[in-house]
Image (cartoon, rainbow, N blue to C red; front, side, top):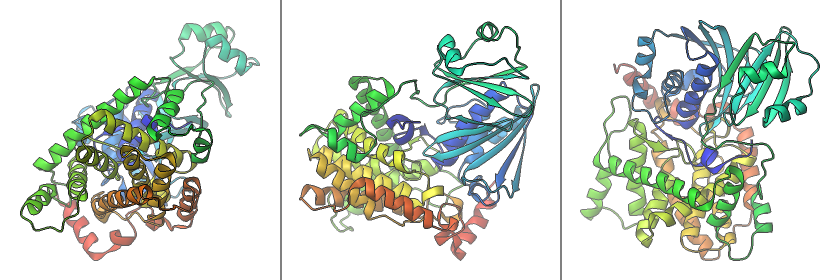
Length: 517
C-alpha cells in the first residue's frame, strides 16, 4: 500500500493511549465484525508470548479498541473506555490466551469468533500509527489493509478462471485467487462490494458456500493504477522546482494518492487543526481520569511563567504547555490526533500551533505546515515504521521531531533543502531512543519525550534556517534508524519490560493502578 498523509501520518482522530494499540485494534475489530456478519457470541483473543501485546494490551487500550471495533464504533467514540461493559451487555464473551507462536510482528492479533455464521478466524497486525493488515482469514493467507471494499467469495471448487478477466468484468481494482486444502477463495478488492447476482453471473456453474464483505476502515481509499510523483526525499528533491515550498509538494503527493484537490486537502487539514486547538484548550483547563499516573499539570506551567518562576525559553514557553495539554487529554481518553502516533501525538501539533500563534499565522497556514510535516512522515512510513513495538521511541518521537522541524522551516518560508535538512538533524538527534512506558501507561516518560521532540524540532529548524549542514541526507538517516531498531532488544521496543518500565517505582505504580475499579 502506498502511504497516504491522512491514512498513515496525520490521523486517525481517536481516543486512547496508543494508536498502534487502541486505534489499530478498533480497525481490526471492525474488520472482524464484518467477517462475523455483525453478530458474535464469543471471541477468543490470542497473543504471542514473545510479542508486545501480552504486557500492554490492557494498559495501552488494545482491549478497549478491539471491543469498540466489534461493536461497530468509531475511534473517537466517547463510549470507548466502557467498551468492555457494552460488549458484555451485548452478550459477547471474550477470553485472552498467551501462546508461544513466534509471530514475525510483535503486534499480532489472532482472533477466533463464534456466532450464528459459525467459527471464523482472523489474524491481523497493527503496523503503527493505527494502520493494520489482515494477514489470514480462516487460515488462508490474505493481505487486507482496510483501503478497499473487500468481497471474499468462498468456493469448494471453481472452473479455471483468469483473475484479470474477472477483474475487468467486475470493474474491480484487483482479483486474487487463493487456495487451501478445503476451499478456493476469490478475493475481490474494489470501490464497492460485489453483489451476489454478479458472482452468479461470473460463476454460473459454481456456487459460493460463503461470501464475506469487509468494509474499508481507512479514510483514503486505494485504487488500481495508483501512482505518486515521488516516494523518497531524494526523489522529491530531484523533481521539485526551485522555490516550491514543502507543503505544496505534500499537496502534489497527496492529490495523486487520494484523488482530492488542493482546496479539499487543505480544508481537511484545517479541520484537524481545529480539533487539536480544542484538545489543547481542554487540556489546559484540566482533565480527570482515574486510571493514569499523572494528573492535570499543563496549567501549572502558565502559572509559573506568569509568576516569573521559570527561565525564559521564548517560543518553548508556549510549546511546552501545549504539548503537556495534548498528552493529558490523551491519557484521560479525550480526543486527540495521532500525528504520527498517539504516543507521539503532542510534539508536532503543539509546535505547529504555538509557532503559528507566535508568527501571526491563520489556520490555513498552520494546516499547510502540518501538510509539510505529513510529507516527511510519508518518507519515513515508506522506508520504515512509526511503530515503537518495531522501532523503539525513535520511530515515534524521532519521527515527530523530524516532521515538526520541517514544518517550522516551512512556516518561516525556508527552502526545501532547509526543511529536509532540519528533519534530518532532528531524527539524527533521537537515534537509539527506546520505548519504556512506566507501568504500561503511555504517560511516563512519554510526556518528557514529546517535550524533547518539540524542543529538538525548534532547535533543528533554527539551525537549518541559519545555514547549518545536516551532513546526512534524510533518507539515509531513516535507513540508519531502521538498522538501529533491528539491533534493539525487544525489551526496549514498547513491551513494558525494559528501561524505566523495569524499575521498582514502575512496578509499585503498576500494582497501585491494578487496584483501581
